[in-house]
Image 1 (cartoon, rainbow, N blue to C red):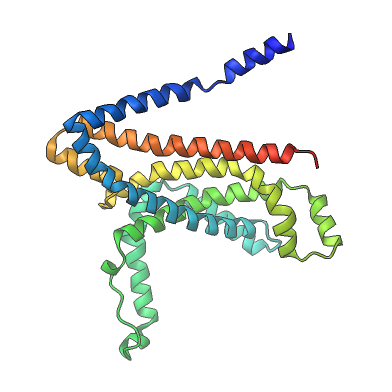
Image 2 (tube, rainbow, N blue to C red):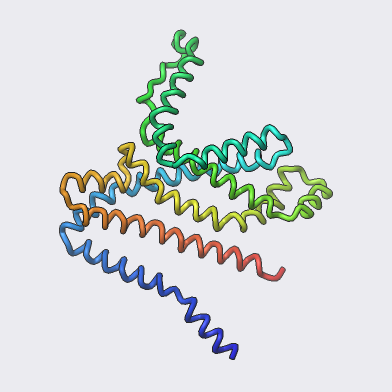
Length: 274
């Protein structure tokens, strides 16, 4: 009975969806390789892959650092710090990413440049600093800043929940052993919290890949922008956006599989007898 149940469970858990998706991906790859139109579309759209990857990695790395800082502020004993962190998270999460992208690109950056020039006016007049112009901040940089701000609020909540999931008794034990706050966080809190954090954290990374397509509204030459420009000039909307969707699926599904493998490996390591 147990053997049959195990066999049935193994058959049920077999990733048929992945086999189907891989078969479709191979079929599309064959079409791209053998069809001149799809091959041309792919060669043009694929030029934006490196921009998508650059935006995603840069924005997610900075959002993770900022999110961790905000999470630690939220867990601080200082009421001012915790309330400031809560204010930031609730306000930023309440603004659609596209609206935040427009605001930072066309309102936030010009305001920052004006403030910077006003604050450094004495240094600029003496020739120590050049005057900063709005055009000096590229649209790519503005897009990365916007995604950093947007995702830092979500990542902060993930980090906060993961840190709070660690048993307080273990932290107290580390304190009794004389460990500093930094050493307690590094050796006790973070290794355990990371296992809880990893699944939603990985999901946010995959979401960042998809949301990076929003930077195309600023004219940044990512996958979506390259497809938009080509489709507008050739009127081959079906072929172009099919290729755009195909490339995004390759990126996101590949990342999801890698993250699941990492989660499984960490779970197995945590279950090993010591």
